[in-house]
Length: 230
Image 1: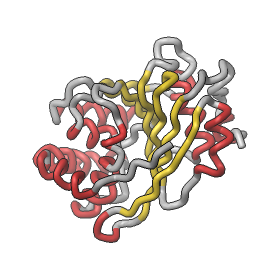
Image 2: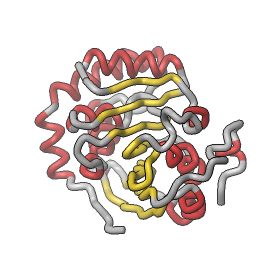
Image 3: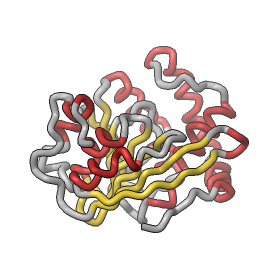
Image 4: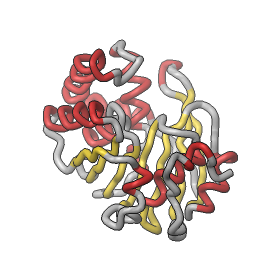
């Protein structure tokens, strides 16, 4: 699978062309952060680099008009920055914490984002629901769980031929997650990159869905984390 590296010169252009929307999102993030504990990063420049630019690092990976599910949306990274610059994407945001769902719904409405729905649900339950199982072109997640558990949360949602795109930290988790990806129907690759201005190193793990996820996954009852596929 060919590596697809982020082009941060292009990412800066995308950000600058929609900077008013990003500033509005930042204002909402700061306003609600005290109540909802959304992020420990609050300074504008840090948010721009560590949240906005990092979220946009995978913007080029989504085909036009892709139907995307985000697992563990939290404060809306990467989904909301992606939606700002890629209005063609159809987004379903899955979040298990009610107050974070409330923030996401507020942000989506305030920013006027169309084609976004927020679901208050657990991924391991929704992934077994026929209305969602293998119904999406892409699944995306950022800072949710180690790769073996994350794959079990994400890949059941993805149709054969689609992708899981996992935003990870500096450590490349592909080796430890490869068996889980293969068991769940995926074939993985990873791309390591550095954020601009020395804001840290990150990794994208990209898993093509090459066959159907076996019916027993996701297992639920916390087994994705307590007994990961390794």
